[in-house]
Length: 115
Length: 116
Image (cartoon, rainbow over all chains, first blue to last red; front, side):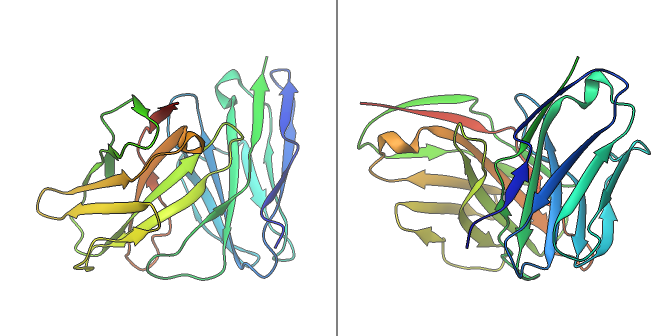
């Protein structure tokens, strides 16, 4: 069990550029989540997948954001035409099952800075 | 709508003392789950403890216990015998356990600093 892995750890980009983040969940975890955390706040839900199906998206996920999990394993989160307001920590989490007390295992996040 | 309130932005506690981190929540659902996560400076969110709304006994996990007062809608985290490694951000979170609702709603967190 190597834990949830996120890449890159840090990303600095200029406004208007596209960025893509990758998340590798714990193997055999069929649920994968993306959260966003801004300074001084708790994480906010963005979207989640069960296997390769994207089942829920937050209203926070504007049209510039897209997430995929093509084979039900790793996932990517792409932000197009980045804005300064996109600067945040993007956290990925996975879990092995759904139900009461479902515990999420989080990665260390990707810190995005948009200049 | 779900809401989590953590009113303590920061706390300083002497090593080996017990500490209580406050959390109140708001929901109209009868079935929900309450979670506490720890976030050290490395950024990773670490699960600490879970309490279901129908659980009659307070949850305990080692040095962590959850003081669940359903009528008051509070779910305070108690850490006994604090250690230097407990210094971190602590987040309370809730999930309404309706079919199709999968998101955790987090509070703004409490920064705990343990003083040697």
